[in-house]
Image (tube, rainbow, N blue to C red; front, side, top):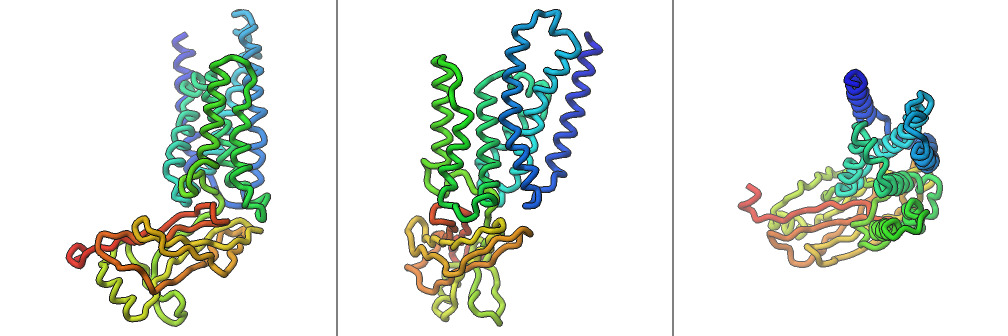
Length: 337
C-alpha cells in the first residue's frame, strides 16, 4: 500500500513537470489552427467518455474494480479530457495578454493549474459543476481564437456564436433542482461575458489583437521621425506641440488571420468624456504570418488639456469587438522632471 502511494506521488510529479514544460515550450501561431480545432472537437466526446465510465464504475462490485482492465479504462477516461483541456488552455493563454484581457487570463490560469496536479484533478473531475465550467471555458477560448479563421467575413456574429458555444455544456441532462439551478447560473455567466457587458469587458477575440499600440507625433509625415510618447507626458509640452501645428496620432498595428478585412474604429476620450469616434478609412488585411497591419488616426484639436487628465484611445472592430487601448496621462511640468 505504501509502495503504491509512493508510485502515485512520483507519477503525479512527473506529469506535473511534463505539463509545465508543455505550457512553456508550446508553439503558438496561426499554423497550429488545425490541431487546436481537432482538440476542441474531441473535448466533448472525452468528457462524455468519462461520464459513461463513471456510471459504469459505480455499478461494479469492489472486486471487479480492482481488475487491471478496469483500472486502465478509468485512467484513460480521466486523462483524455485532462490532456485536451491542458492543450486548449495552454495554447490560448498568451493571447489574453495580447488582448489586454488580464482578468480572463487569470481565470484561465486557475483552471489550467487545477488540471496539472493529478491528485487535485482526480478529485475535482467527479464534481459536475467543475466539468461543465471546464468544457464551457475551453469552448469559449478556442472558439474565440478559431472563429476569425473559419468566418473571417462574419465577425458581426462573433459574440452570438461564442455565447452559443459556451452555453452548450450547460444543457441540463437531469431534472434535479440543484442540477437545473447550476446550469442556469452557468448559462447566465456565459451570456454575461459574451453579450451582457460593455465591449471593453467582454471575452476578447483571441486571434485578433493590436500589437504595441502607442501615441506618437506626426505619423502622416513620412520623411520625419515619429517619436513614441511615454505613458506620461507634461500637459504644457503636449499643448505647446499642438499649438505648433503638430498632429498627435494613435498608432494601432493590428494582427489578424488571413481573410479578415475590417475597418478599425478608434474611440478617443479625455478622462471619461468622448472626444471623437472615427472609423479609419483604410481596411486592415490579415495574413498567415502574424504580421501587423499598420493603422493610425491623427488629431490636432482637443478640449482644454490639464495636468491630471488621461487621454485614451480605444480600438474596435465592427464597432463592438474591443481590441485594446493606449493611455497617455498628463502630468505637471514638475512631476515629469
